[in-house]
Image 1 (cartoon, rainbow, N blue to C red):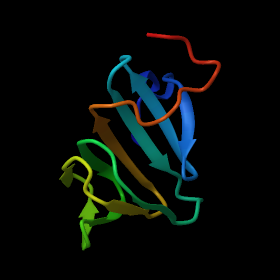
Image 2 (cartoon, rainbow, N blue to C red):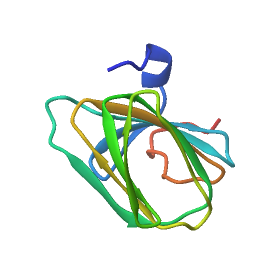
Image 3 (cartoon, rainbow, N blue to C red):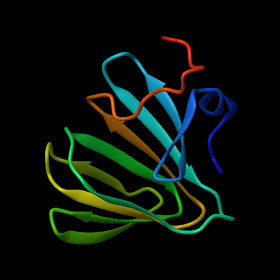
Image 4 (cartoon, rainbow, N blue to C red):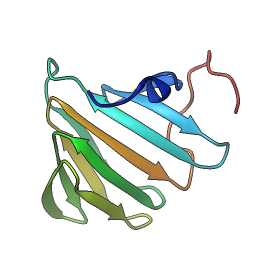
Length: 114
């Protein structure tokens, strides 16, 4: 997986079974997500939230956004408008970065504040 030690030193949690390293500035979050090659496909069920921007770093994510399904390979970006229903299907060996203008995941209890 492509994330450097500086990312891997961020607080780590999981989202729908995917490893997530969280950069949290107190208002926004950047989620560095990775699903190992030895894992099975993971589906993040349909949900909504505020605006999300992201990029696939490695692998493939199948995204269903507002009822339209797209396959995103490494280098593909996405912008999901606020409150638009969407879901993701991560294939094994996928890593991606997701920026949120809100807090999306709880930091692990052992994580220190920024």
